[in-house]
Image 1 (tube, one colour):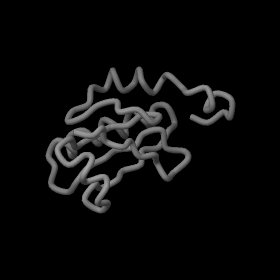
Image 2 (tube, one colour; image 1 turned 135 degrees about the vertical axis):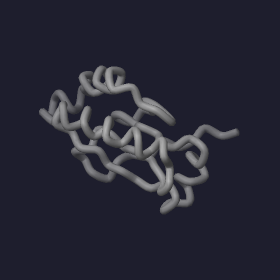
Image 3 (tube, helix red, strand yellow; image 1 turned 120 degrees about the vertical axis):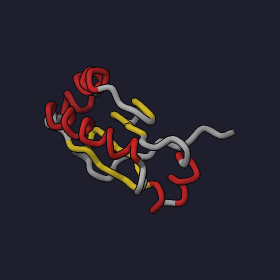
Image 4 (cartoon, one colour; image 1 turned 60 degrees about the vertical axis):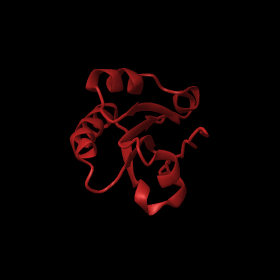
Length: 101
């Protein structure tokens, strides 16, 4: 089995990339938590449907939702608000230098 490729957000302001698909009940439960925690730190969430991209579907078909924070997989299936909050508190060096969220 190959390691799935971790996509980058197309929005430069988004620290969180949220991989989902239509009809996923776990995705519907996790998205409000992810958005609330991103709002808390002044960041945006880019939501991407894996079924609209063949490569994303091949890489993440059985793992949605996938929460990627600053280019690293933070969680799959379920999200813990406190753990996500802690991850979002840590800002990458380049964001600290540029003053971005």
